[in-house]
Length: 261
Image (cartoon, rainbow, N blue to C red; front, top):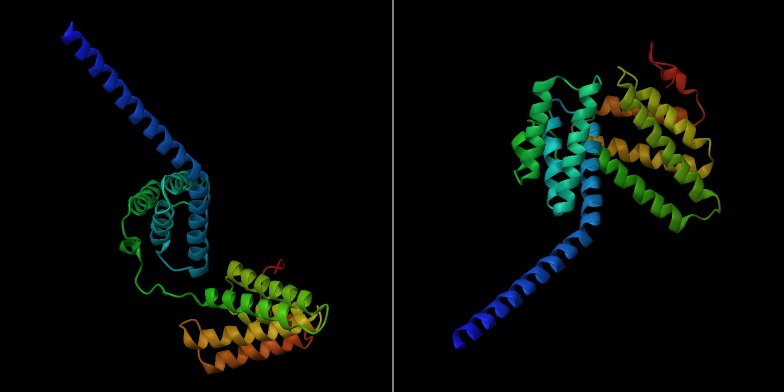
């Protein structure tokens, strides 16, 4: 009978320990799932940021690096970020497989290898192409735009000035975006003039924003690798002033540029 009593007590203790372990597991699982949506949302942002930077850099053979970087940054957030990175990576390759943007099964397999490498904690620089700039000039330009909008909001003396400046900044961004999309030879002066022209039409605030952004862009290019010398910078500024002063941007329009621009 004494032996049976010990067995009963031992069994009760084991059940208690098991119950505690199950409880700890449930609490930890619930805590992880509580953080999962935020991690997934952050991971999606990381993937979008990598895609955006890839489009802005427009650098040959850089896609694998940006794929690996996006997955790496997302996975660092936790299970939710890792999950989001895998879903987005798989969806991207599936979409490219049905469209014209993919380059065949071999390239898709190489993309997925880069995705897995980054998602598993591998250094994305394994795929970094030679010469890829560390700091994109456009990111500096975006920072300049944000700073100027902040300055306008806090220091503007006219009621409509901030709105005009913000709208002018959008016009300048739209012209830059179209220039990148068009990718048309000798079209940069036209888009510079067009952005300044559209911004200046909004009023003093838009004209001011166009000048600040134009000057900042030329200054940034002067320190980076995207500028092509003083003569080209002076020609850019001439186109900027032409559009800002109400001149027709079509003066700089290259032959054959699609009408939608």
